Image 1 (tube, rainbow, N blue to C red):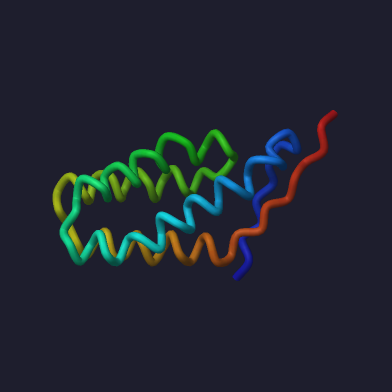
Image 2: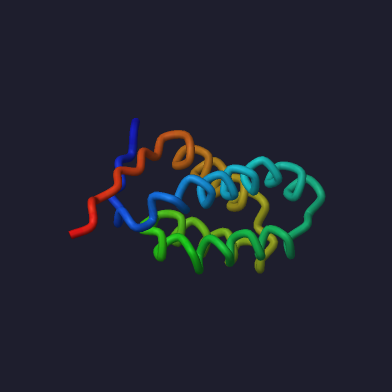
Length: 101
C-alpha cells in the first residue's frame, strides 16, 4: 500500500538522495545481521533516528530509534523485523512536495 508523505518543497532536491542512501543501507542489513555487526547496525539506526524527522519522514525516525536500541541489546530478531519494516516503507513511500508559499 502506497504511503503518501507530504514534505516542504524546499527539500525536493535532497529527498531523492536521502532515500537512495536509506535503500543502500537497507541492502547492507542482511550481511550486517548475519555477521552480528551490531555496531554498524546501531550506527545506521542512529543516523535514521537523527535525520528522518528533519526530512518529514517521521516513520524513519521511529524505525531508526528501534533499530538503534535493538542493536544495543543485540536482538537479531527485532533487527530483522525492523529491516523488513524499513523495506516496506521504502518500497511504498511516495513523497509529495508542498509548494513554498
